[in-house]
Length: 278
Image (cartoon, rainbow, N blue to C red):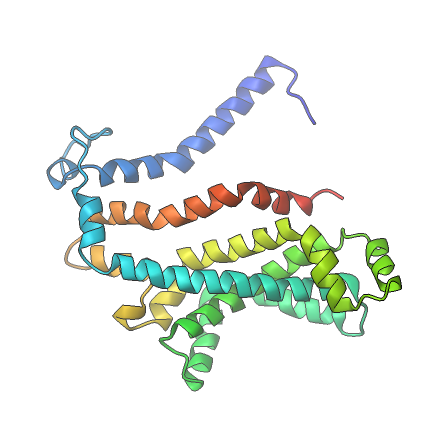
């Protein structure tokens, strides 16, 4: 591990970290502070940094009025399904690329990774008529498939990088004992690859949960809408903007992500850093 030797190096490093932390967390603090302000204080000409009287009305209204609970359920279903399916498919594809040799392996891998180079809108334009032609437009299944399509290239490469570190001797020893390829994958490779699997699933879950563009375009029914477009349509429109309600609802929506990341942070960090050290 590198060490900072002089006081100038240490001071400079601390200043840089402080500036980065300020730009990262001040918007979050300002949003949280606004969520606890009543409208009378929120729209003062001289803004207050700390609420004079913490106000819970925005949080109560967000939960008791409107479809936020229904939208949270829709996001939970689509995000969980896309995360698990994406992780399973990425694990199978990554293991294939890392441990098997076949003629089209490299071109196929480049083809899959090249899908990530296209902007969100281009992929969405391609996915939209496909879902429409098979009757999956405005359905949770169609939205889940679109999330998998977008997240799968990066997820496959993440699993490929991890599987490359799994010793071939371990797999060869299992083959000598008569285990099939699928049995080796399920019983030997996957148990030791759990941090990478969780990292990929968490990446797909976070992307799906925070999505706005795909869910806004592919879902048109109010009862199937997810939290991203739900918050935008309810709190911000061309005639009015309820900033206090929007901030409170945003923190309620962010709670599941914070909870999942807190529970799985060790596995997530282990999975992210595992590909950097061999």
